[in-house]
Image 1 (cartoon, rainbow, N blue to C red):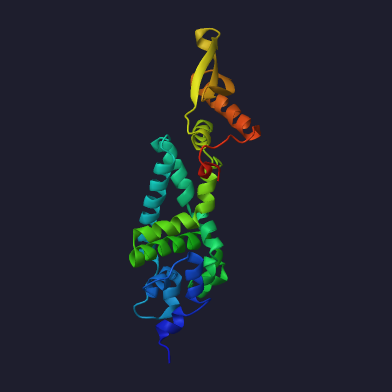
Image 2 (tube, helix red, strand yellow):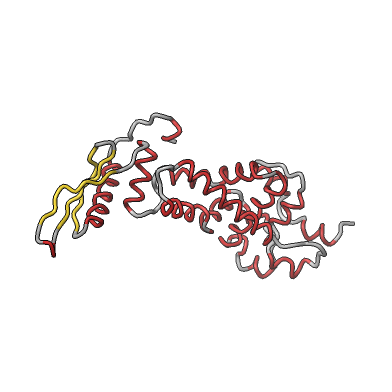
Amino acid sequence: MASNTEVAIEQGPPLSQLETALGLKFKNLSLLRQALVHGSYLNEAHAPGLESNERLEFLGDAALGLIVSQKLYRDFPLLDEGDLTQLKTSLIRWETLARAAERLSLGDYLLLGRGEKLTGGQHRPSNLACALEAIVGAVLLDSGLAKAKALVLRCLKPEFAQVTAGRVTLDSKSRLQQMAQARWQAMPSYRTVAAEGPDHAKVFTVEVLVDDRALGQGQGRSKKEAESKAAQQALKTIDTDEPAPCQASELCT
């Protein structure tokens, strides 16, 4: 007869299906089981030795941040620390991780207390995101950083594609810089073409160029405002323009 722990854990689809979805085979399957245990479940399981996924989540969160930061650092060498931080935040926030978890049907495997389950806990973004972080931590312990990195990049592949395409929300100048780097491997430059009016009410006209090609122009009471408007116009120009040829095919994917 199975022990209380085994009865408590063996619920939902078999973990072999989740391993297939993750593209991994665990050496220590108990790590994957632990990654799926929500704190609410422990109040009802009465299973000695069973732990929640919180410690694995802590580890996975740190590994996830490192992996995402490293990829952004390598893929966008021209972005500054502030822009890289914005992109990283967009990739590791709960909503993003929850979408990745949903693609894995991770909610079907979560071990939740009755109350948590009755209130839709298997679909709650925070639960899904934390479980995915815990799985990253479990993979790190089971197979090492290289396997954890491969998992993260695979799970977040659609989101990284959005970043590369310049569709992640940044301020207009940062977004233009990101898009110009991805498309042309070049940095935008801003040129003041006019400064009219008295000193107390001067209006600046600024043009933005990429590879000596003028993409937009903007006006403002300060150069910063004019540059922002020029970048907005450049983004509209790029959206309506024909795709730029890529020197390397991976830049267009």
